[in-house]
Length: 311
View 1 (spheres, rainbow, N blue to C red):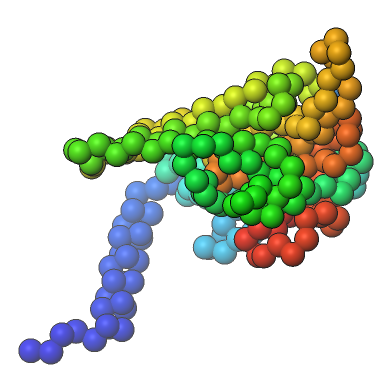
View 2 (view 1 turned 180 degrees about the vertical axis):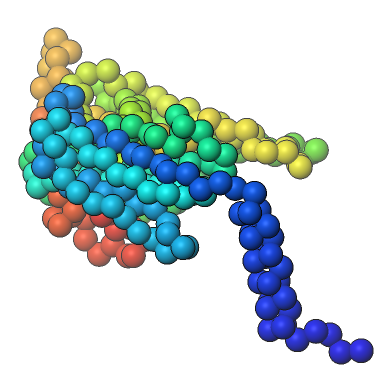
């Protein structure tokens, strides 16, 4: 007996899927959703005449309702649906665009959930500057000893690469046990006592902003060491404190006077977590501006995976 034609099998699957969807849909009730978007700046003041958009799917095709916010920063949109996912966007000249994460209405009508009131924060475009920016997905070239990385050159310090100045030190330690369990510890440290990292989180209202960070790195509050752990057991999820949504500001190349006061330092930021992250290095000493201009990346000869497009 010959097996069924692959194309015919796909057709049968599509028919069955359609029957299932139609049967389920027959049990649903169409309702109206209504979105009230409020667009504000970083101080909470409403932004009038901002372009707002509410995206949705209509007959499996993407669609949107667009308009301008009023003097109170409000824009409303409504439509009928059985269920679905909504998306919210706001933009205005002089501000970074914000695209909020998708919002699920759910399959059961809930008046509170089907009438969301998202607040969208637009960050002002300040003074974007050229910076050394690079996306990294790498591993430490040597274990059990500190290996330096040069943020300006964009490579490991010799003998592992072409780097000259050690900005950040990475030390990896790996243990493998007889039962198949393994532990990996990554220690991030710095060559100068006043260098360091400062973790920062992005508020929910700002998570969709093109500019994830502040405009300036903090002047103080940096810690000199960060330890990342990774425990793997056969057949179990990885236990780790790594978080790819984590972000940092950093201070490197710090020089101090005889009284211990900082007289010179370079600042920057990191999007992501080690060793899969994007870094932005401001080469001007004592300039805490970390608002990157993607059109003027000082890092050259980057491949398609190393480029950085966000500010």
